[in-house]
Length: 146
Figure (cartoon, rainbow, N blue to C red):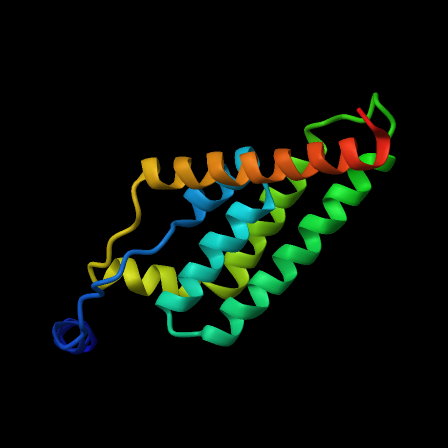
């Protein structure tokens, strides 16, 4: 009887028309593109899930973290393992998604919702990396005359 009830209620669920970013896509793109990828994709998911306050807060946190990462990058020794930052912000992005979006992503997928293509996420990662790299280079030139 319970199974019939679940099938019956799922018939009345609306099929999502908007696409979302998957946890795997966000984590992978964040590793290669930086924290701006995570911020953009997570905020877009929050918008799709109609949680505009969390979308706004995501952008605030993303900008502050990006500024902090850029600032910290200038104070690290040259032999500092470069893999640590990408691994760290990819892990943090995955945890944020798991804690705040996993349930909505799962429901979206169960109701027949679609996710964005890997090409779109790759483009966002490339764009984010370019912005982050340009920012770091501009600051290096400004402060160190490199």
